[in-house]
Image (cartoon, rainbow, N blue to C red; front, side, top):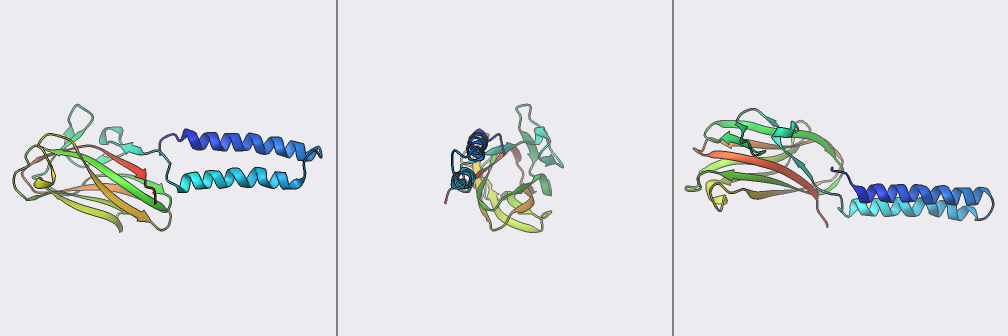
Length: 192
């Protein structure tokens, strides 16, 4: 995830407070209960902060080499254009990152050049364990896009019961005669 300055502040402040309390306890100015509290309270606050989902979101793009494209080309505006008429599994995938247990939302920002018809255009999914464990999936048709040539957000919510390694976001084109562009994939923790 992107730099989490609040968590860094909590850890830094907790370290300073714990060091000060430990020094006071070593000189006999406070009893040992304060040392325990100096470690337990910041740990609990940091743990609750992370479990509550206040971590910042993280965004990946093909051009940053974190998402891998097996087809298509850059648009010149930071996005990646694909020919949806070619039926290809996982034409874009990545970044294969570890995620801790919890609720997440992956948002794919996509656009198509033509919205008429109801043919499937793209399959979106979130997978773990080298694609062996499917966490969320959605098929988009041309009618799921409100306007042609305008980026729209398509969310996939998923829940991890346990920490997972190598979580990735994947797009598979379905053979519809469309141009499809991926701007980015954003991941954020969800509350509740």
